[in-house]
Image 1 (cartoon, each protein chain N blue to C red):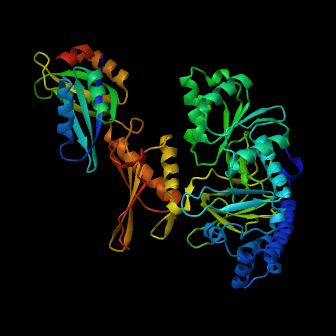
Image 2 (image 1 turned 90 degrees about the horizontal axis):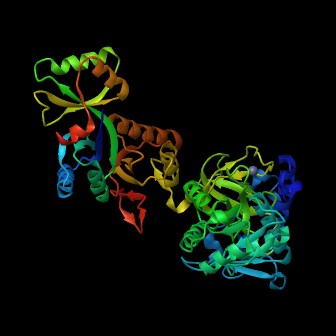
Image 3 (image 1 turned 180 degrees about the vertical axis):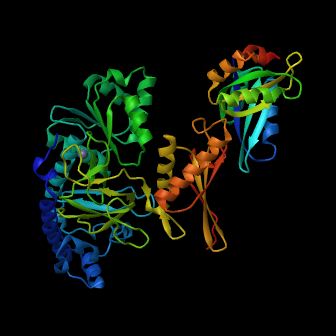
Length: 433
Length: 143
Ligand SMILES: [Zn+2]
């Protein structure tokens, strides 16, 4: 099912025409109303009128999280406070919180996008949605809530916490859709088991999980334990909140970005150059319909890639891969950008489970060296030395092929890699620069 | 006819082998045969013991990766050419020996060798048809 048949299946050409018109209007407006953007454009020597095609977007300077912090709290708002009907804020665990605002029309746009997202994730009017995202300054709870009401489904605004009570409600109200963070979903499964309640006896069909990165492995675990189809939803408050992109339950292979509202780009985080489709880099968004808090080329620091191939669900909106990491984790090895998550994908492809691994960077003479330590668990182990050597060679070959860097692969014993709070320490950089 | 062998992944670090033998001794497990195959980085220790379950549990609880493989224990005449006869026979029938090692204890007058084949059942059949004694598991563990 598709919620907005007209827009979600737009042919590329028509979509791009809408994008350009909306982009130009947004640029005109931020130039006129937000001093920050006006100054940035001037510094770069460009005017909104210089943007004559979507390709020209790359002429515009980026906006970073630091820019938002510098304009705390309302400096980036593009409308007078009279027109702002809602304020959300990120938690700001590292430094100042970032504050975002919405006009009545923005709230309606967001609800529409969330309705689209819920339907893509398997929901319909007749469903009962158990919404365990937190309600409050965080955008998760209210985002899903408004979308569910827009769709016409029945929403249970249970929010986070009080897990035992949630399980009782699940038993009594028989919700069919679960929305929460993936880690809370697993927590619910554990709590239900302790209470002697099986998810097999509940009525869930689909779960829509997001607000934190999660692996394919975690998806399998959730689907098995909660007895539902799990899809990934992506969003960030700076862009609008949840509902920026969503996996369709038909393909569960990449998240459709609602491109009639947000223009995505992938850039090389080091050179800031725009990368072609399929290449991995930092996700950048420009909002083209938001009124109160438009963002222009906002650097999300999330690592993914864009894929324009048609999807079996019928949506024409481009897909982004599940977010695999943060740009903060990026390593530059012999001039090549490497994300630890890419090496993880290579290992997972061979092993089918997430292995414990560590990247050790060093320098011999003037040359960077990369050693990949991989713990040998039961699935990798063989009593034949030649098979283990083949495994080392295969990992090195795949890393070279997919990432373009040579690596020395070393198999190590379980627990040989240092753990910090249960997680393997992914990178040890011994280079002295 | 099959004998269960335990294998352990070891990094090439001083003292790892001694650690395995001390863990097994502490668990009261008797090592009947062993071989270590190694590279510059790591090694695979293969063991025939008198109590597989105990050996596996104690090693796993110390964080070792443990694998189990079926191998074959074969009596080899304790005279020149005894081993050659067997290898030649297998070679001619196209059976690959992945590796082999000797058992400490003889069986009667004959030496005992442990063989790891790519096609175990076929190998056992050929050996038996040609009058080679294949020792069964329960006997091997207590030799
Ligand atoms: Zn799709």
